[in-house]
Length: 127
Image (cartoon, rainbow, N blue to C red; front, side, top):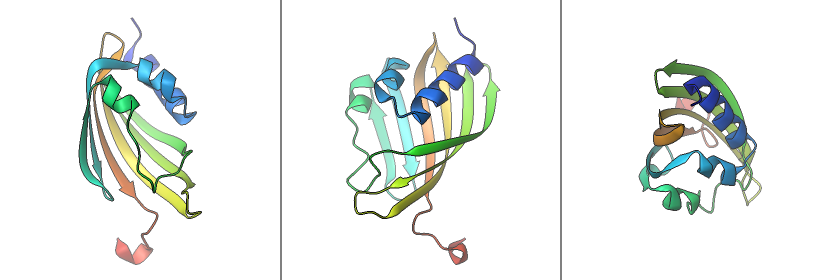
């Protein structure tokens, strides 16, 4: 059995390289992924199949670039700060920041909670 640090390091590497088929392998069959987004609101995905079929929406970049920051680990849980960027289908830039909280059991992710802020349309005066 891997440590939580080993698991989150591998998951971040795979996710950062957009290797979604491998990312799906780290999910439990009955995973729950809650996403709270400044642009799309709240979404809950249930099960590995639903996540593997998710669509980020017509306005999301086809390929995202991630930079992972602080990682906090406590037992079988990990929290990861991240920034992301990409180019949308219309040519405009996407820029975001997120915090993902992972819950592991038996080397699989059983629950994720993501808080995502879309910074693409924000100006400094918006904060």
